[in-house]
Length: 121
Length: 114
Image (cartoon, rainbow over all chains, first blue to last red; front, top):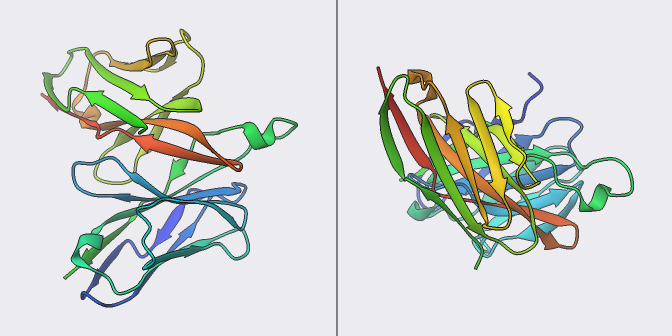
Protein backbone atom coordinates (compact mmCIF):
# COMPACT_ATOMS: atom_id res chain seq x y z
CA UNK A 1 0.00 0.00 0.00
CA UNK A 2 1.58 3.28 -1.11
CA UNK A 3 -0.89 5.62 0.61
CA UNK A 4 -0.53 7.60 3.82
CA UNK A 5 -0.45 5.35 6.88
CA UNK A 6 -1.04 6.17 10.53
CA UNK A 7 -0.43 4.24 13.69
CA UNK A 8 -2.18 3.41 15.92
CA UNK A 9 -5.65 3.46 14.42
CA UNK A 10 -7.28 3.69 17.84
CA UNK A 11 -5.96 4.84 21.20
CA UNK A 12 -7.76 4.88 24.52
CA UNK A 13 -5.97 6.59 27.37
CA UNK A 14 -6.65 8.01 30.78
CA UNK A 15 -6.67 11.73 31.41
CA UNK A 16 -3.20 13.00 32.24
CA UNK A 17 -1.30 10.39 30.23
CA UNK A 18 0.93 11.18 27.26
CA UNK A 19 0.22 9.74 23.82
CA UNK A 20 2.21 9.68 20.58
CA UNK A 21 0.91 9.09 17.07
CA UNK A 22 2.89 8.30 13.96
CA UNK A 23 2.28 9.22 10.34
CA UNK A 24 4.08 7.82 7.29
CA UNK A 25 3.36 9.97 4.23
CA UNK A 26 3.41 8.92 0.61
CA UNK A 27 7.09 8.40 -0.06
CA UNK A 28 7.71 11.13 -2.62
CA UNK A 29 5.66 13.76 -0.76
CA UNK A 30 7.66 16.44 1.03
CA UNK A 31 4.71 18.26 2.62
CA UNK A 32 3.00 16.78 5.67
CA UNK A 33 0.00 18.10 7.59
CA UNK A 34 -1.74 17.19 10.84
CA UNK A 35 -5.44 17.85 11.41
CA UNK A 36 -7.93 17.18 14.18
CA UNK A 37 -11.55 16.28 13.48
CA UNK A 38 -14.41 16.11 15.96
CA UNK A 39 -17.90 14.77 15.32
CA UNK A 40 -19.92 16.86 12.90
CA UNK A 41 -17.04 19.12 12.00
CA UNK A 42 -14.59 19.29 9.13
CA UNK A 43 -10.90 18.66 9.86
CA UNK A 44 -9.11 21.53 11.61
CA UNK A 45 -5.53 22.35 10.71
CA UNK A 46 -2.93 21.75 13.43
CA UNK A 47 0.51 21.96 11.86
CA UNK A 48 2.46 21.70 8.62
CA UNK A 49 5.92 20.45 7.65
CA UNK A 50 7.86 20.98 4.48
CA UNK A 51 10.57 18.35 4.58
CA UNK A 52 11.84 18.43 8.18
CA UNK A 53 10.91 22.07 8.82
CA UNK A 54 7.76 22.86 10.77
CA UNK A 55 6.54 25.96 8.94
CA UNK A 56 3.15 26.53 10.45
CA UNK A 57 1.38 25.86 13.74
CA UNK A 58 -2.24 26.60 14.48
CA UNK A 59 -3.25 28.45 17.62
CA UNK A 60 -5.22 25.27 18.36
CA UNK A 61 -1.89 23.60 19.04
CA UNK A 62 -1.37 24.30 22.73
CA UNK A 63 1.96 23.77 24.45
CA UNK A 64 0.84 20.24 25.33
CA UNK A 65 1.06 19.33 21.66
CA UNK A 66 4.33 18.83 19.82
CA UNK A 67 5.06 17.49 16.38
CA UNK A 68 8.29 16.41 14.75
CA UNK A 69 9.48 15.22 11.40
CA UNK A 70 13.15 14.56 12.11
CA UNK A 71 14.32 13.19 8.79
CA UNK A 72 11.70 14.67 6.52
CA UNK A 73 9.92 11.35 6.16
CA UNK A 74 7.62 10.09 8.95
CA UNK A 75 6.16 12.45 11.55
CA UNK A 76 5.05 12.07 15.14
CA UNK A 77 2.43 14.04 17.05
CA UNK A 78 2.67 13.91 20.85
CA UNK A 79 0.04 15.10 23.28
CA UNK A 80 1.18 15.49 26.86
CA UNK A 81 -1.12 15.44 29.90
CA UNK A 82 -4.15 14.52 27.80
CA UNK A 83 -7.53 16.04 28.58
CA UNK A 84 -11.00 14.77 27.72
CA UNK A 85 -11.31 17.61 25.19
CA UNK A 86 -8.45 16.07 23.22
CA UNK A 87 -10.70 13.18 22.21
CA UNK A 88 -10.95 13.37 18.43
CA UNK A 89 -9.78 11.84 15.18
CA UNK A 90 -6.24 12.93 14.35
CA UNK A 91 -5.63 12.95 10.61
CA UNK A 92 -2.38 13.16 8.74
CA UNK A 93 -2.14 14.22 5.09
CA UNK A 94 0.68 14.62 2.62
CA UNK A 95 1.21 16.36 -0.67
CA UNK A 96 3.96 17.01 -3.15
CA UNK A 97 5.39 20.18 -4.60
CA UNK A 98 5.54 20.69 -8.33
CA UNK A 99 8.93 20.67 -9.99
CA UNK A 100 10.41 23.73 -11.63
CA UNK A 101 10.57 27.43 -10.87
CA UNK A 102 7.06 27.61 -9.45
CA UNK A 103 7.72 24.85 -6.92
CA UNK A 104 7.56 26.98 -3.79
CA UNK A 105 4.37 28.69 -4.91
CA UNK A 106 2.55 25.58 -6.01
CA UNK A 107 -0.13 23.71 -4.17
CA UNK A 108 -1.02 20.12 -4.91
CA UNK A 109 -3.88 18.14 -3.44
CA UNK A 110 -3.46 16.52 -0.04
CA UNK A 111 -4.03 12.83 0.49
CA UNK A 112 -5.23 11.70 3.89
CA UNK A 113 -4.31 8.75 6.02
CA UNK A 114 -6.90 6.63 7.85
CA UNK A 115 -6.56 8.65 11.05
CA UNK A 116 -5.97 7.83 14.71
CA UNK A 117 -9.06 7.95 16.88
CA UNK A 118 -8.15 9.11 20.38
CA UNK A 119 -10.46 8.60 23.33
CA UNK A 120 -9.45 10.20 26.62
CA UNK A 121 -11.30 8.77 29.62
CA UNK B 1 -11.34 35.33 9.59
CA UNK B 2 -11.13 32.81 6.78
CA UNK B 3 -14.20 30.65 6.43
CA UNK B 4 -15.82 28.00 4.26
CA UNK B 5 -19.59 27.50 4.39
CA UNK B 6 -21.34 24.48 2.95
CA UNK B 7 -25.03 24.03 2.31
CA UNK B 8 -27.17 22.17 2.93
CA UNK B 9 -25.71 20.53 6.03
CA UNK B 10 -27.69 17.40 5.34
CA UNK B 11 -29.68 16.02 2.46
CA UNK B 12 -31.81 12.91 1.96
CA UNK B 13 -32.61 11.80 -1.59
CA UNK B 14 -33.82 8.69 -3.41
CA UNK B 15 -31.64 6.63 -5.71
CA UNK B 16 -31.55 8.12 -9.16
CA UNK B 17 -32.01 11.70 -8.01
CA UNK B 18 -29.57 14.46 -8.95
CA UNK B 19 -28.10 16.55 -6.13
CA UNK B 20 -26.20 19.83 -5.98
CA UNK B 21 -23.98 20.63 -3.03
CA UNK B 22 -22.85 24.20 -2.40
CA UNK B 23 -19.69 25.71 -0.99
CA UNK B 24 -18.97 29.41 -0.48
CA UNK B 25 -15.75 30.81 0.88
CA UNK B 26 -13.97 33.89 2.14
CA UNK B 27 -10.26 33.24 2.16
CA UNK B 28 -7.20 35.43 1.75
CA UNK B 29 -4.47 34.27 -0.67
CA UNK B 30 -6.72 31.66 -2.27
CA UNK B 31 -4.96 28.91 -4.18
CA UNK B 32 -7.46 26.13 -4.86
CA UNK B 33 -10.77 24.66 -3.77
CA UNK B 34 -10.99 20.96 -3.10
CA UNK B 35 -13.82 18.49 -2.63
CA UNK B 36 -13.44 15.36 -0.51
CA UNK B 37 -15.77 12.45 0.22
CA UNK B 38 -15.73 11.10 3.75
CA UNK B 39 -17.37 7.86 4.75
CA UNK B 40 -16.59 6.38 8.15
CA UNK B 41 -12.89 6.98 7.64
CA UNK B 42 -10.48 9.58 6.30
CA UNK B 43 -11.45 12.01 3.52
CA UNK B 44 -10.97 10.76 -0.02
CA UNK B 45 -9.91 13.30 -2.63
CA UNK B 46 -12.43 14.02 -5.40
CA UNK B 47 -11.52 17.24 -7.22
CA UNK B 48 -9.22 20.22 -7.06
CA UNK B 49 -10.37 23.41 -8.77
CA UNK B 50 -8.08 26.33 -9.41
CA UNK B 51 -9.58 28.18 -12.37
CA UNK B 52 -13.06 29.64 -12.76
CA UNK B 53 -15.55 28.18 -15.18
CA UNK B 54 -13.74 24.95 -15.96
CA UNK B 55 -15.87 21.95 -15.06
CA UNK B 56 -14.15 18.88 -13.71
CA UNK B 57 -15.88 15.54 -14.18
CA UNK B 58 -15.40 12.06 -12.85
CA UNK B 59 -18.15 9.64 -13.76
CA UNK B 60 -21.40 10.89 -12.26
CA UNK B 61 -19.67 13.62 -10.25
CA UNK B 62 -18.81 17.07 -11.56
CA UNK B 63 -17.73 20.34 -10.02
CA UNK B 64 -17.15 23.91 -11.03
CA UNK B 65 -15.63 26.99 -9.39
CA UNK B 66 -16.66 30.64 -9.60
CA UNK B 67 -13.81 32.77 -8.26
CA UNK B 68 -15.70 36.01 -8.81
CA UNK B 69 -18.67 34.99 -6.68
CA UNK B 70 -16.49 32.84 -4.38
CA UNK B 71 -18.38 29.59 -4.55
CA UNK B 72 -18.28 26.10 -5.96
CA UNK B 73 -20.87 23.41 -6.58
CA UNK B 74 -20.57 19.65 -6.62
CA UNK B 75 -23.14 17.80 -8.70
CA UNK B 76 -23.93 14.13 -8.42
CA UNK B 77 -26.26 12.66 -11.05
CA UNK B 78 -28.16 9.37 -10.86
CA UNK B 79 -27.29 8.97 -7.18
CA UNK B 80 -26.62 5.52 -5.73
CA UNK B 81 -26.64 4.28 -2.14
CA UNK B 82 -22.85 4.14 -2.32
CA UNK B 83 -22.80 7.93 -2.68
CA UNK B 84 -24.02 8.24 0.91
CA UNK B 85 -21.26 10.09 2.75
CA UNK B 86 -20.20 13.47 4.08
CA UNK B 87 -18.91 15.70 1.30
CA UNK B 88 -16.29 18.17 2.49
CA UNK B 89 -15.31 21.38 0.76
CA UNK B 90 -11.88 22.81 1.56
CA UNK B 91 -10.00 25.86 0.43
CA UNK B 92 -6.22 25.92 0.13
CA UNK B 93 -4.57 29.23 0.84
CA UNK B 94 -1.03 30.47 1.09
CA UNK B 95 -0.26 31.38 4.69
CA UNK B 96 3.25 32.72 4.14
CA UNK B 97 6.83 31.46 4.46
CA UNK B 98 6.20 28.75 1.90
CA UNK B 99 3.29 27.31 3.86
CA UNK B 100 -0.14 26.26 2.69
CA UNK B 101 -3.19 25.41 4.74
CA UNK B 102 -6.57 23.87 4.07
CA UNK B 103 -9.64 25.30 5.71
CA UNK B 104 -12.60 22.93 5.68
CA UNK B 105 -16.32 23.49 5.79
CA UNK B 106 -18.48 21.42 8.13
CA UNK B 107 -19.55 19.16 5.29
CA UNK B 108 -22.84 18.11 3.71
CA UNK B 109 -24.15 14.75 4.88
CA UNK B 110 -25.80 13.03 1.93
CA UNK B 111 -28.05 10.05 2.49
CA UNK B 112 -29.31 8.14 -0.56
CA UNK B 113 -32.34 5.94 0.07
CA UNK B 114 -32.92 2.87 -2.11
